[in-house]
Length: 68
Image 1 (cartoon, rainbow, N blue to C red):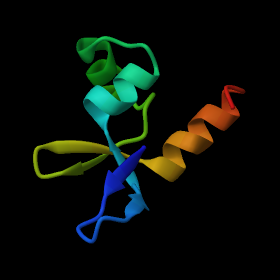
Image 2 (cartoon, helix red, strand yellow; image 1 turned 120 degrees about the vertical axis):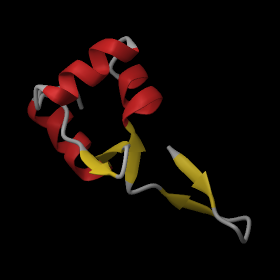
Image 3 (cartoon, rainbow, N blue to C red; image 1 turned 180 degrees about the horizontal axis):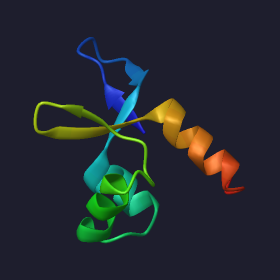
């Protein structure tokens, strides 16, 4: 996933939104996504009230699961 930079260039995102980004990539419902994060099944960092998934941790999780 890419995010538009202010100067019009594309920059690589370092984190994904837990929902909808990661949840939808995994084919989960919103509820199931937050439950998986709560159980530690999805690596998250909390910034205030926001849950973010570091791209590196997500990629590692998927690699270890044999999905990539």
